[in-house]
Amino acid sequence: MAKRHPVILAGLDVGTSKTAVIIAAYRSGVPKLLGSAISPSVGINKGIISVIGSAVKSIGHALEKAEKIAGVKASSVYISYNGADITLRHCRAARTLNKRVDWRDNNRCGSDPFTFVIEGIPRDEKVLQLITPRLIPNEFGIMPELDARAITAGNRSISDLSESAGLSGLVVKGVIYAPMAGAESILSPAEKELGAILIDFGAGTTTISVFDRGMIRETAVLPVGGEHLSGDLAIGLRTSLAMAEEILAGDPIVDIEKKGISVKPGCFKNNEMQAQDHLARSIIDARIAEIVNLIALSIDKFDYSGSLPGGVVICGGVSRMGGICDLLRTRLKRPVKVGSLTDIEMDLSPAYTNAVGLVKYGSRLITGEKYGVRSQGQNSVLGRFLDYFGPQ
Image 1: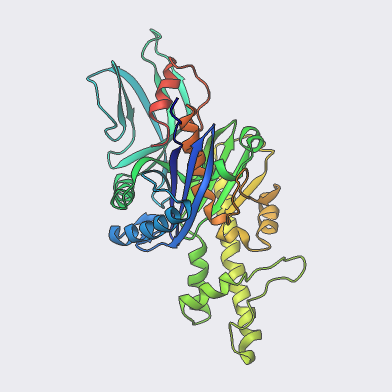
Image 2 (image 1 turned 120 degrees about the vertical axis):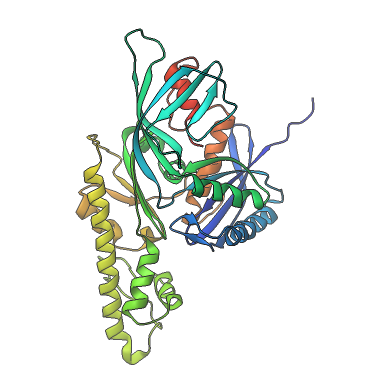
């Protein structure tokens, strides 16, 4: 019998500040990580591609380095998306006897001899994921409707992302809502099942998502992130963005219980250090407090009454600042911890969280499992519907 070659999977996380690539081989039920690389993102603003040519270069640089380490070429890829245009909308979906549709036409898909059509979604938006669907049978008990909420993004944003990956030589297998990929990487099975809040502090956006019973239940994207800290510091200290980013890269916030907040030594002239240190501390404190307050307000608005015993798990660049857990714990009145990558054989930085989650997600598809979809039975209306309208 011929030896079966492993399936090569790639995960691509295109963010505001960095582009991360993971290459993995799927064999014997689990993905084996082969290579990883990160390159600075160019032409991307708040998670949305603004200059395709620049984004292609960023993807190409990271992909080339990852392939060199892995020793294999990647052809197909799963991509995460977490742009500022993410919207949560109420919608209805109906299964109707209609002409067959070959593939997805925005919010429609074929299911011979039926067609599922989502109503209530603007034509310029793409459904990334349905959450909390509820079956609504009619009086005859046939062709029921589904009442649900949809996580959507602009068609143009998703199209530009897929085009950029395609121009880099990759075949896009799916565009996944980023928190779902992050949950695959850093939330334990117990946290996803019993309930937890995942907060991702990105450079351009901050995302808050509730996971419970294995599914995403609530989500919100805030248009603030780590880059706003850099901007505030540059303006307040009257310095360049490069210097502000250097200050932040030097871990400006340390363990608040031991040393308080301090700025990386050597960033200022000696006779200015004390005054500038105090000013930088005040600027960082003010922006972090604002972000934490916006997070708390977003969680208060969620239509969710579960207890969430898994508490709050945070990731992203800002999460590595000491003291942020204490601020969140005090404001949210829940246990808070910094998430870490689990069940991987490579020593990777937290910057690869979403990319690792993407290859894990892809391996689940290979084995016939769908993330966020409980076993509904292959012939059930809800199960078949979610098979079509899971992650794009």
